[in-house]
Image (cartoon, rainbow, N blue to C red):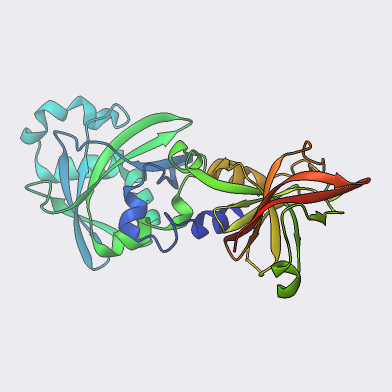
Length: 297
């Protein structure tokens, strides 16, 4: 599975709305400011003071709030006295200084942008407080009034930064699977304490982790897991796997662990999510086996 497929299959992301995606601290939209590659993120707080522009993104009207920044050197030099600058001159200066930002927004929104003039206020209703970063450093921030169209364009799963701790550090429960096999209902009904089920694959076939009942993690990577109704021999001890472990396994091969567990390692037989029997790892002669201690009836 690809990283994007893994993320989309997790409960917290499966079918996530644009609003939920945008509310995530992992939202990071790649974009370009002039010749510079950068990332657009949502800022934590709205700036106290902005130069507000009335803009149109095709048919939708928005207010773009420019924040004072040394990145806009000429605008920065007259910022304190900008209220005294005639509107045509101020707009011409904005177009000159902020042209790369306007082009960035046009590309990011996939809509043609046109500056209509100055806006009296920062606009009512919901707004995006956005910040641009390049090489890990903040360039500047700005605001933009929101719309459902912009939310749909910005709030896409492909803009989730899968290296962000809020994504990678989510713990998932897993179980170590040592073997899986078919057995008839009659044979299963006759299993009793003291019986031994041979497990010839243990020690030769790599162990697998079944994660969150959705994925199987092995040395070959990550695949979707589906319960096929087999009897599964799994460890009694739970295993915790972070989402980051799954994402890493999708990108690189892991070492296959085909080693047998230590003698008397607690195990259980599971079918369709229900425990059929509990026991431990042992041997019959030289053959690895599941030794039954108790049977669920």
